[in-house]
Length: 290
Image 1 (cartoon, rainbow, N blue to C red):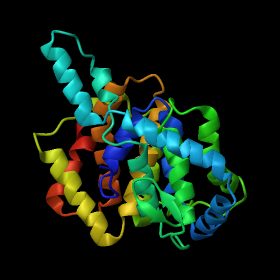
Image 2 (cartoon, rainbow, N blue to C red):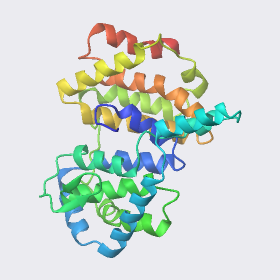
Image 3 (cartoon, rainbow, N blue to C red):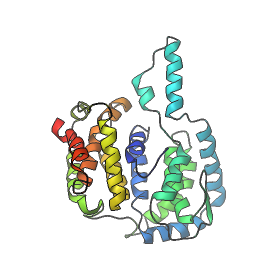
């Protein structure tokens, strides 16, 4: 369900997670890993506590089996409504399109070009480099929470945490972290961080039916063509993370309502130099609506 070309699905689900800020930070870190960082991750994974990570990984898979995805959440809500029960908007908005293993598979396949051989296993994916397995486990640990116990979260995250604390050069950073259009994305992040974009303002922005999704789809194709898909993923995750941090008490439903405009603003800035005029103008409706 989660793909590199549709970061808004992943970011929106992460934003309504009970541990939204740590989940988004973990995802952002995974998509910033450098080649030096990946090499260190591979070594750390091979030196891990295999028993502890094996138990924790098995628990994640068990939790996945009992974790309803968004289609199931909607079916449950529909049945409840037919039976005359009330269904809150937050109950639906808290649903996710994928589970921890599917998020882990996305990280293992798309976060970076892993430098090592496929000697490890990622649930739901199969053989993968040890570096990819370390990054995938670190993200899955948070995604499976809060049901996954803290000791198991720590076990799965231990290799990644060890590398992250090990020095500089582990993660991509700096003024070009979002590619050739980093400057306007960084400016947007600053606006979000300082509270310049209120949730009520963002949720009030609307598009005619089908226009938003079509424009975002065209933007994704532009990112693919220009080699900016990972930049897009980073930008959408980071803007979302700052929004969640700036609005810690926002409900899941209110969060989702605000993110369509915020993600349009993000992508508009990322591909403003390469996207065709029509979809670019449709994305710009978010800024105009404010």
